[in-house]
Length: 92
Image (tube, one colour):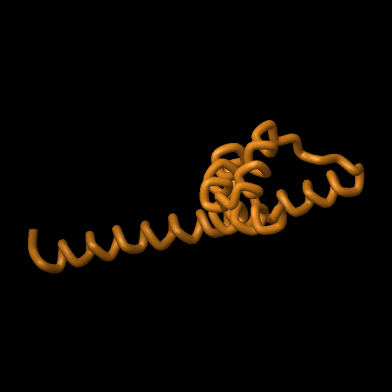
């Protein structure tokens, strides 16, 4: 393969990666909008999401084990690190 062919292939790969990254970002933004809407609907209906491990998270917060509480919160809800930290901060 000559240098021109290699560069064309490399450019195509980089373009594909950028395109995939852009689509992932768009999907993340759409998902965030849907989640916000669902949160508003739940709030309007005065519904709360049940989390069976929330008692465990609260106990960990009371014991001063904030990092472990964040870990348990993430495992039980699927939340990201930032969201879990903010939720645990609100608890204690």
